[in-house]
Length: 125
Image (cartoon, rainbow, N blue to C red; front, side, top):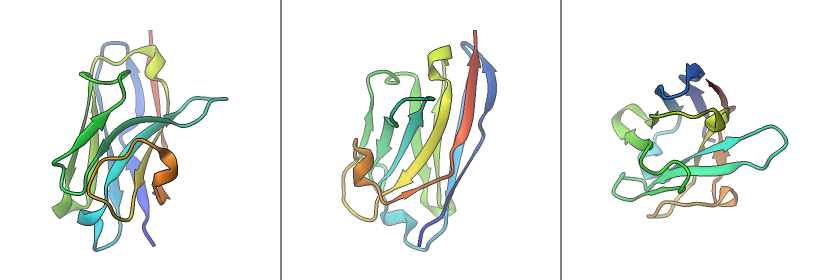
């Protein structure tokens, strides 16, 4: 069983920055590809960024490329999402996800096995 807990969400003005953290349980966290997704009310969960188990590969949705950065600290069992130049359209609930295996980064939510409870991010105009 893997538990994921997001933190760091909140309210920020457009153009500002936030950093989300996702703390994972489990001794094999370092083997898990990880991802961040966002869900807006009434919409499907949207892929944002992903990282391979060792951080050597990262992948980004076009909508966040150049603004968001994913990183991980396997010693702390934590993955981060640094979000800069935030826009009102970035508002939503942000979820981290873990995949139990693989050596790439993954774009599709169905390929992930565990999800956090979500963190609300609100970007005001």
